[in-house]
Image 1: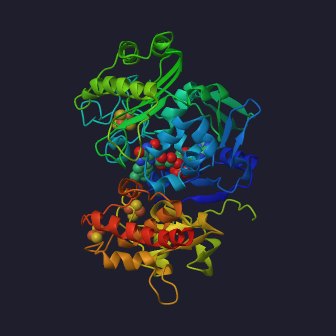
Image 2: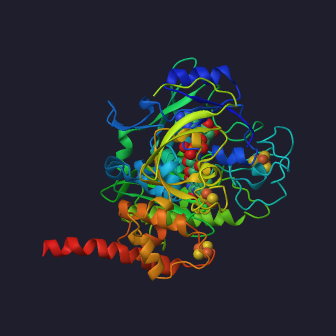
Image 3: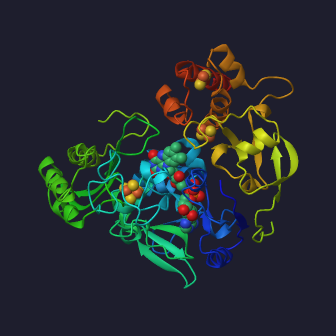
Length: 341
Length: 172
Ligand SMILES: Cc1cc2nc3c(=O)[nH]c(=O)nc-3n(C[C@H](O)[C@H](O)[C@H](O)COP(=O)(O)OP(=O)(O)OC[C@H]3O[C@@H](n4cnc5c(N)ncnc54)[C@H](O)[C@@H]3O)c2cc1C
Ligand code: SF4
Ligand code: FES
Ligand code: FES
């Protein structure tokens, strides 16, 4: 690991100041992604800003708007096991439990999970070029080994995926990110938080220099999906692996008709993949296979495979049908018994 | 706790409780908790498998929670209480899980075992032990290249069962 300076911040303002003073400084929280990348020499910050002692980044609290505020430092396990989350936003709890391992979920924080970097093999291997790691050096995944890579929203510069499970649920639930920075606080819609690669794949998200995530906000209207949801994650082994394809499905069904729907995909793009047209296609229909198939077609429109991942297009279509079926039936995918019902 | 200013590449003083004893240490910011334990404190029970959070061999308990020590910076542990495999036995008596691992032959080479046992100690506290499937899923962060998984689950079930028994008897 390259040597670095260590700064233990005692307030958000202190952290922002430290970040602004050293432009290549990185925030460290759970460390499960950043320390790993530093060991590989992929991240080489000259300073780390330890935010884990900042009290205001802790806690899960009710908001004035009637939703929940999850502090950036709250560990993934604490979110997944919180009674309010389980009762009001069970899709989020399920998605978190589908990811990583108990040890990692104990250390991993909400803010760190949002900002975890891609698992593209070339990104991790400093002996190969990679536009995300070294802008302008090229993308060996295109034409190389690309089983884990994107089928939607990719560019000629990068076909990486965002690896988070938690974020797929947050996208479906329409969360917001609250950040603090040198220009004061702001709120970012989840859909606007992560970026598509375009011609700047080195930028994963829209956080600006010196900014820090304070909290994730869950909106009260997303509680309507508590009865009909499912997080279905398909991967090369049943546990402890990143998604090839995952689906977060959430329905609000009244008198046999869908009145609201949310659908987001993981493992297929540089950000959780959501399209409002696909959700609109479900609204007003009975919760049946014909409606689900129409939504899948909309959501996957324009999907394009590469050498090793064309299978993902059909896999995603079938996973969408299955997850919507599970949601409609009120029988979400179990994250313990992995048989797909 | 005072905030530290940028400390460059110097060492940083930390205080931790390690297996019940207070320790004042000077650590370099680049040192992981795993390397601190193994290389600086001679506690080699905790194993280094992958060094990247992928195998669980380095699992220790930090404030009672199971964590991969290879991805933790030692400097960030200031004020925390850490328990390693060396700290589980009490008054010369093995922890019930240690005894159960021996009884059920829950290892072959033994390299993953300290991590498996620390992980299982936390698992039982967490209560994710209602079925074999649940135990397996919630032990999925600990790989065993010798494939002792079946016996590991047996050992854990045995300890869970023994802990339950007195409660049931009291209820009857
Ligand atoms: C073996 C392994 C398997 C895994 N499997 C999965 C999986 O299946 N599914 C899944 O979703 N994830 C998985 N993960 C990833 C894991 O979820 C992330 O590593 C974790 O969520 C990162 O959180 P952290 O707190 O440890 O972040 P850190 O490593 O501390 O930080 C990660 C990034 O976030 C930034 N950051 C942290 N906090 C803030 C903040 N408050 N404001 C702004 N920026 C911040 C840091 O600067 C850094 O760039 C796996 C990880 C490993 C090692
Ligand atoms: S897909 Fe993106 S992250 Fe992977 S090698 Fe190409 S540019 Fe790098
Ligand atoms: S050595 Fe830490 S998880 Fe493998
Ligand atoms: S006993 Fe050999 S790795 Fe588990």
